Image (tube, rainbow over all chains, first blue to last red; front, side):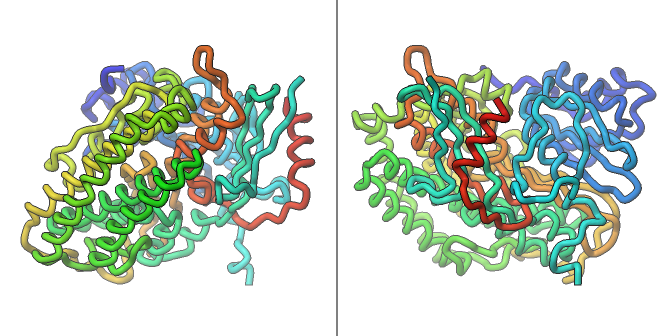
Amino acid sequence: MSGIEEPVSEEEVLQRLKEALGEALLDARIAGKRRVFVTVDREHYRTAVVALKEMGFDFLSAVTGVDAGDRFEVIAHVGRRVSVAVKALVPKDDARIASIVDVYPAAFFYEREAWEMLGIHFEGHPKLERTFLPESWPPGVYPLRKEYRQGSERG
Amino acid sequence: MSIYLPIGPQHPVHPEAVQLKLKVEGEEVVDADVDVSFVHRGIEKVLETKTYVQGLFLAERICGICNVAHTTCYAINVERLAGVEVPRRALHLRLVVEELARMHSHMLWLSLLAHVIGFDSLFMLAQRDRELVLDLMEEITGGRVITSYNVIGGVRRNVDAALAQKIISTLDGLRKRVLEYKRLLGEDAILRARTEDVGYLSSSKAVELSAVGPVARASGVPYDVRECDPYLIHDEVPFNVVVYNTCDVWGRAMVRIDEVLESIEMIRYALERLPEGDVRAKVPLLIKPPPGESVARVEAPRGELIHYVRSDGSEKPVRYKVRTPTLANLAALVEMLKTGRKDRPVYVADVPVIFASIDPCICCAARVLLIDEKRGSVKEVGMDEVVRGE
């Protein structure tokens, strides 16, 4: 491997994502140097991630799950030079989204983490099992959900 | 016939609570899995209940050795959210302390590798020389390992000309020692026999599994956040991204040794060009950044560290996400444990060396967890899992 072959300009990344997704791109912006944030609904999350992979991005930094109050958000952080955050909106009453493990195998542990902490189900993940929480942790309790209170907060 | 062999969570060669679940046939490892669910602290959840200034101290405690990387990452995120301009002198000093932290982390790692191999005189020597860096750290920051040096808006203490000179001359002396270690790694038959072709991770697998840090760079992947996404003054300071193509533990050792040498030059460069001015911008104690989000990445000693923060305009973050380099390298570790190289399978005796080679920090990787677990009979539980899982 000679070097890192990714698009280096934020504008180029944004332009190519617009071409690949068209209307499905709900929000897209350049947030400072080497930072691109895009938002899609969950049906187009995989399409966006695959588009990045085909652009030459071969590195997945992380997958973040967020409890945003009225909905969940799953954010895939892709890229070495430009860090592209693909944010997908996931409804709370149907917390499911497509897995990207087959696109980026590194998502294996990251999706497990989002599943354990927030209860977001990643469809197509080869082995969605406990990694981080202890075996004694009660099933169906998701600690990073806003309604979950830590011991010190319970009063 | 294969046998299930659990190593840990308590084991003399790795003091942190982790369990390696190995499937062995005779002396050969044929399959592996990792369990990191023993040291749960729930830091991400707690960060949602702290103000941005309080959070800095918690972020510092995600990892002892990498504390500088975590506070740098955290401070950059909050500064970007709140629009704080950091004085240039502070950026130089942040770089100096970050590289000193990388040096002592890599030297600690070298000593532990030597210890795992059974080369305890090298363990002692590397530990002795690491003390020189810790002494400098203490003079600059007041703390030897946990530094509390970064604050939102800059750094906490200044470095005067006399101290800058002392740092440079101490590191010049240290450079000779490090070169000696490099010679040793190149020439010592035992070190080479225990590390060469051990813990094989091909370049394609390193890319596929998104490995980071010295693990990726020893497999020929030239990924270094300092070069790809400069966050302090890395676009001004000349340095080389150290890459080896041996794809084994020996390469990971050489990457780290060479990086210590690079760090010395970077520190010298930054100190010789230390700009005049303040070392911190004035920021209020209660920071209320406008609603928004930010991603910060730094090159921690163990590899890429990424923090994500979301603000809703209040004094506390809505979400603070941390992905540490050890977690990123867990998949690569499993790959190393089960895949040998050509005619060299993975032996049980290689396992501690392979495990040590990613410089694992389990409390980092498992920081999201919530309570301490008290398991009774771990081995039986593990057996059941293997029966269920495979």
